[in-house]
Image 1 (spheres, helix red, strand yellow):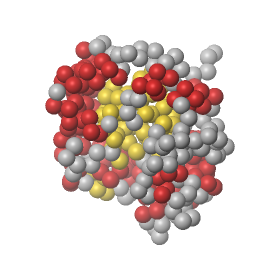
Image 2 (cartoon, rainbow, N blue to C red):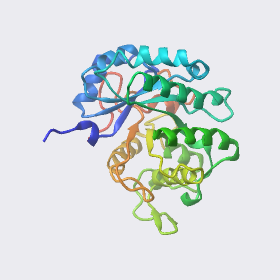
Image 3 (spheres, rainbow, N blue to C red):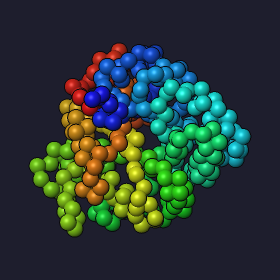
Image 4 (cartoon, rainbow, N blue to C red):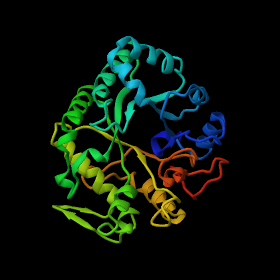
Length: 320
């Protein structure tokens, strides 16, 4: 039986906000040699797509936020985007197109996310391709997240997320979500224990009806599932497009190599079994492949890498 790395493994985000990273061909080799079968890129970088040819790595291709308006207002622009960035790569396993990353409902670009998804969908269909189009949200859209069963979207996010969910339900596409227990923990370290954020709690921390929560990742994700149920998205698949922990940059509060290594190792094994509300394998992408020295403004942003720019592993991780 052939071993299918993509089916077995977590993915890793390949961010490039740095001036010292190895060439794309070396990066693809690094993914392959480490058994990382899935990748997410933030824009349709041609060198990366070229390097992915024939690699068997499944890739989520991002649409940069500033392109959304053009894609939303012009079907021809959406068609050109697909012709330029998808069609030339039949031997790259493109799994999803992510139209925008973490657009907030208050952002002037928010009005373009839904129409951009629809125009890209139409362009994909016209080209006889089977690639689903979605967008990436963050957890700031939740108005209530505790307990998880009471999860709901905020009033300010309501019309924005309702429109997106309705499109995704109609196209049977997943919702892409970035989930960071690190951010939740550091914003409320008095009430949230570090063990709960790192998957190291010895027992149930939060009992919610008949469901018990031993870690914050599950609690956040299940609050998202609850929020989706309330707006007609009960059957949507959620893909975790980013989750990570920085190894430095917050003056030792929680960003240490030990904590980050614990988080990544436990996350990789945990997502094989899903959450209390939705058991089963959960497609998840670690953030990120490399430390990126030009990220900011927070210093922690530079320290999310699983590898140094010289390709040295920061942690001892098994990705499958």
